[in-house]
Length: 110
Image (cartoon, rainbow, N blue to C red; front, side, top):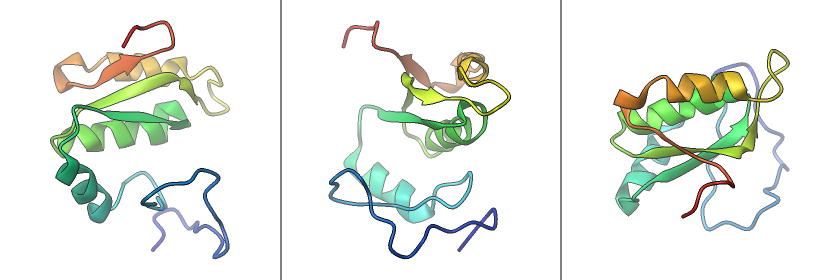
């Protein structure tokens, strides 16, 4: 099913070995994805990707709304043509501290 009129090619493969893959066709993750993540009861879910101010932000808030604790990995995000630096999305993410999402960059200590 496609939210935005786009679907990956049938022969697309992940460049990273993973135990489980979920394909995202738009802003929202599937219910199956959210249920899979929730069953692990993670301390936090790391979020990164392309178009920080739209797709990444939407994913982070959806994770929060599902009761998870998203953390934006700022070094692994990039913005759209509006803001290639991703700073707009990072600022929007920071703007909602009452909603719970956190930030992480390579300058932080874990």
